[in-house]
Image (cartoon, rainbow, N blue to C red):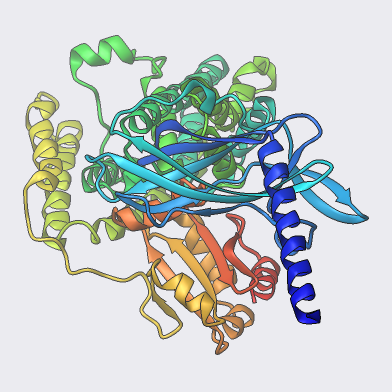
Length: 568
């Protein structure tokens, strides 16, 4: 009899609890909706919209390493169709205290963006998500709701998708872009253009042309601004079309690389005094006067500076691009404009100085030596571009292109020293076009290379990372490329030092290196998953940081060691 009464009481109590929970659940005014978000950076966007009324809140994920009250939302999407991966982009939350314990919550209308990677971009996506979260007011109600949404290719974003997102203020983003552009001026990629500007000053000093020097610097800055605006338009087109974009991806294009290589060879020969290139008569009269007052070369040097600066991911550049590409086309245009203004600011500063403050060096024999030294820098840059080309084209292609270019350049030497009447451009231009055209001929690809073949660094395999972390391993990923100068600096000054190599060779650490020298969709998706659009990119995973700890573009030994420790 006693056992019967106890069981009856337990059942009655359980029943009352269920009634209470169901009543509270029914009374919970928190409303969840899935909405379409269009497409961005090759991924389909969606959003989990949570309408939270006044006096209610929903618990949010706590920052990494912090303990908090409540439990964060859980999203299960395994039953979805035509989806390879879902990335939840948790927005910033509000910090508060519950019974004296820190907690993080969402209030008001909140949107959790979801970046969907489809298995087949041409087919519809059936997104099926089971959402578990805790909504609280005077009582706390656990919610467990199934939601579904069908997204067809080309579906536009719901207007509500943009409304509730928390984003960095635009003015902050523009300041970051200005600083990033300014820092690009001291990156090694821009050295060849600085060499050309030094030579420009030397030439103006021969006739004490201060006003012309100012105009030349202004036109170089204008060339930089124009180039950045063109890059912005290209970026917007790629983003709207769903294609992947990355800072410096044109260095993955053999046609671009061969063109830059040939231009650098020509500039080097010019600085070494092998020849002087005169534009064709009509074009020369339009652009360049016989007194040297024309400055088309100054404008083009600004364009060239922009092209060579893009493989350098300077501090703040990656940050500005990551935020910009998540925004509207007008914001992308503004961010690229500010990057260009920051990069061009030293040139505009010189152009704005009064002529009496422009101190030109006095002509002398030193100018010949300076010209040859600067030619050496350009020659080294050309060799570097040629090395990168070897990853894309067979060596015979690079060799034949170089020979054709040298033959064309020798024609200019013949004109200036032997036959002034020689119509150089009629002969040289076809040779240059043939030299460049060799990159368009279908041919066997060079033998695949690895950036660094050591026992320390393993090939990149994104699928293995979660498995290794579950085994208690710490995984560091280094995304790099042969054309990335900043990557080379990081490797030389940090990653290959005995201090860091000792950390990376520990039994529990796995080092992976992703080679982005050539186009690789898996690496591009990996970068964009973490909101990055350029390299270098280093990230550390581990039991303490399964979502990864991203490192800054410019590595330090302390930052790497700290991330390895936290991830472990």
